[in-house]
Image (tube, rainbow, N blue to C red; front, side, top):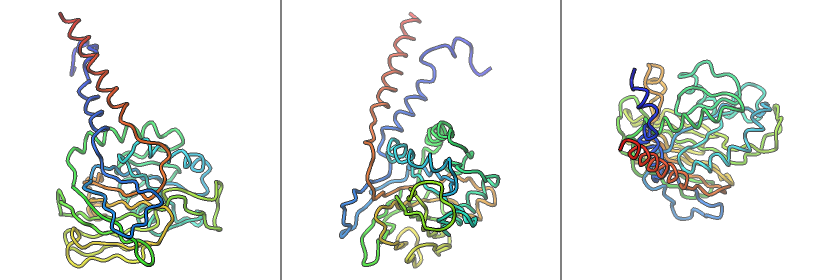
Length: 314
């Protein structure tokens, strides 16, 4: 046995774990929410980031459960602040109304790690265990916490966004990759409140949130682009960490996520699916203000339990 019965009954046991979770909740993470009235005439920077976790949802416009879950996820995302970046992946199956090529590319990557994914909605935190169905979010929350505890060291990432005549330009400003071998920098562009096209099957409302519409990948070993999908442009000359940029359409509300992760080839050769770091810039309204008060409650509770344990031992 790893511990005695008395140790398991000790009310202060596990407080180090709660305290670490609490500190993860209150530390500054890596995203910026830019209000919808921002004009982006001057570049807007994320600042140094890297700690945001990717939560990818396999969803579809024909999925009735998804249409019920989708409106709730905006509040869920806001409650987590910048700890997570939620991305909706719509399949190319002849029925989904969106069928974006960028999502098909990302789903291929998802299924390289979890080939059995087929039902909707299914949530995956950083390439981990798929969580399916309406009641999946409790498991997803647990996966988020566990992954934050596991991924203590991240690649610092910074990018900026500026308006152009036709849309927006996102440019990598700085990155210090933990490793280069078999890895890439990935830009993901999602649209918030995307109008559902008049095609395919739609059992929900007229819009969907967090729809992945564009992506570009830059191989850190070769310094070359390996994907450019659903974007106006994507360019690099020789160094992904210094001159990699994308241009995307002028959506009313959007998020851009920059990720340092393994290449698809590396994943297919059994590399770790968890990313080395991610940072998000979201140009959208926010439904609730993120608060760290619950984290301080956890810390205070641990302190109180520890004092009780000490007094009982005297």
